[in-house]
View: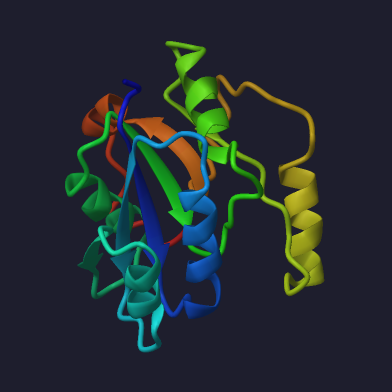
Length: 173
């Protein structure tokens, strides 16, 4: 049996994206996962839509959205040895998304985390499109001292998070 992965999805009024995101998670070749949604006062049908697609998902609410605080809350509720941080609008592109993240972090015992590419959507602003292509190009890179780590599509070891949780006060990812 493979390790359990806890997928933490941050949401706020994501009814447009959550259905597609969860459907893409359900078709993953890696099957040993749980899904936890941390919702920030959605006033649309985000949670209802999510539960209609994945009835067993775990939900929790946060009143003041701060990315680190939301992730910490979701991770505290998780059971997995590995934690995937995912924004609801970061939809996996294929059925190997989860196994690719998992295999990458497992391949290097010194790795604390791995983040994946983000591809802009048709609705992305032109500046965001430019930034995504610059930051998340096709070249694989190993960071040793660069403090950049993007947690909208990433995997971390829970053992590392226990030593270094996300900053609850930070207002950006």
